[in-house]
Image 1 (tube, one colour):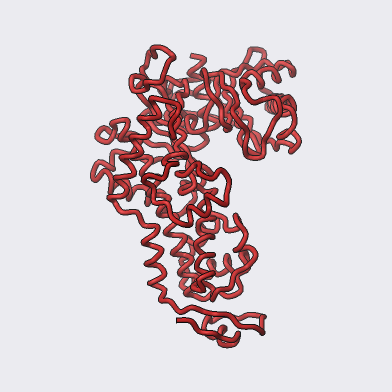
Image 2 (cartoon, one colour):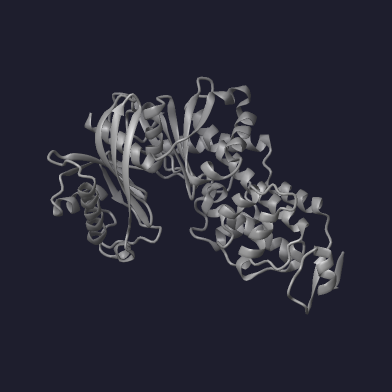
Length: 474
């Protein structure tokens, strides 16, 4: 049923003060529970659907281990040993993956103890798009500054682990050719070149006695960093702006591996799981996911990532709200420039709204009115928006748990158990994300879910790179 109100009547209905005093709009009366029920039908994933997704996930992992021409790339990392926690030594670590990058000095003290010193540097915009020598000379200069500032002894050559968070084709532990740049980088004369050699040449130009012994993916680093403290760690996961996972695989189970026998018979695999189900065979892909995919970057790619990672969750919420506004179900049909602009509803706002436990949802009102500039936000609207945030985040956590369950199943670790180290802002800071993942794992594994220990794994890109460098040194 539709009714037309003037602004005075609107104020009374929405219990909301406003400075606007002219005009009319159409308000559609739909029961709040009916709206939420419609959204629950879209976003809630049943236990049966979880099991179906997990089953397909395992099959895609197996296919990726056989061939590179698959959705899941399942890339061998050339890391073939896990730490014992007894490794000792001082190493440098370089973490490059965005606007800022870090240089770290990692002191492994044995007995799973670590000391770390780190310094952040901001990469100049021109270095991101100039010839590759500009960027790598800047990295080398920053390392020189770090060494001088912290008075690091380089009389003898010091080993460095290099976390490089851009697509590479890794061909050895310390070799990998650059496939492409993203995140605002586009360095000329670099595609197809070995990233370790480019850094080594820049270090030589600076006459620095630093040897790059390991090229590291951040998920592999997360696994290795936590394994230094907990040797039972078999999986590393990133749940932040993006998502990915690495895990320990038997070399015998990697038909595409052509690198010869491995003494440990173990290989850490970088799954690149963000691309899971790009064919849309099993994931609960909604009209909102489709809209985001078509209007955003890389349409048709990174399907799994777009449903669970921090870069995309807020945008899904925005698209749901926009749909309800256009149907005159939310905010009386009144929107704003901010709500109409892609990317303006940040995932951090979802987190803030889910933390709002006040009776009137006053913080939710503040986000919607003061940040997103919605003119009218009735208590009913606040409750609906909060439920949208819950549903989108719950779906993300349950899908992330499916990925973890698939990896644990592939390793045959459901009965014997393992530790899963998880890093990233979504897992660490989003309210209830950890518990929602645990609930889904219980639905998938029953009592055996207690065998899977989810642990926050911090600083994999720093400590993990140093641990890998230590193992390479050994």
